[in-house]
Image 1 (cartoon, one colour):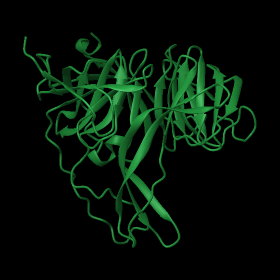
Image 2 (cartoon, one colour):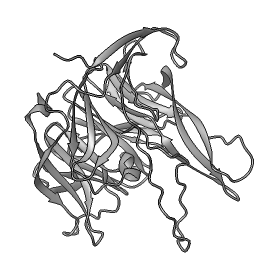
Image 3 (spheres, one colour):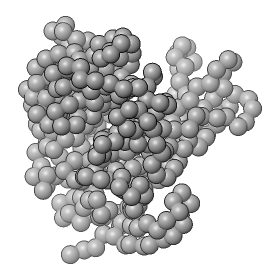
Length: 370
């Protein structure tokens, strides 16, 4: 059996003052049929043609334990049956109990849906039909909702973007992310080390605009683990929610992909802030499913799709495959609505006329779920 990893033990890494395992994998995974193109079979397609809801920017697709599908959109929290039939909009606009100004994220916990609103900061609970069960305010602002562990909500918060230089040139800045634990009465405690990400910002006449080059991604992986990505390089950390430490970091040999520069339309009235980088982040997205960590890379091959690497919690490079979604551009990949859950793929698609669909594909690949 070929070996795909080398293990080192180090002490006092720059960000973490304790011993942790560092694993460097080769560029070749263990699976003999690695590098295959997955076969996708469309099961159903959701559009807003019937008029019960309106797709503006659908995303954050999640499949509940009972198989129902939830989609987040502008002032909409849409629930669909397992066969894609629209059931209900669970979003209630307002500032009172059970109401939201703007939801940021949600998770499933048992038979409940737990919703996070960034500002004013609160956590709200509802049952799977949308019935309000309770809520509480957060004692301080938080930026990200990750999961629930034991009797705590696991969240994260980042430092504010600060420009050090004068003038209007875009500036790359370091952003510190911290994992936070939140109790049922809204008390917030810091839990763990700093994860440093890269943003960029630019001064305007009376304001500042900011965006990220690479931001924090954190996904629950098994009972007490988080898989974390926060660097431009190929690196994944395993954070232990019990010990509140990073116990393992792993990577694999990877050839970085150059970004293609797009020509700007001088007549366009849309003001955007393009990342001041020449190379794409090695990892664009993280998925965790069936105890496996899937890293969507920046490698896109014509006729094949996007390369996705598969690791286990120990950091072994098990497998990789191409996901045939070639219509997604590299510059959009990190933000594009895509979800892998078991042998299901959920993705937003836009046709030539600009009409939006959310499509569920069945992944026809036995090895993916072994």
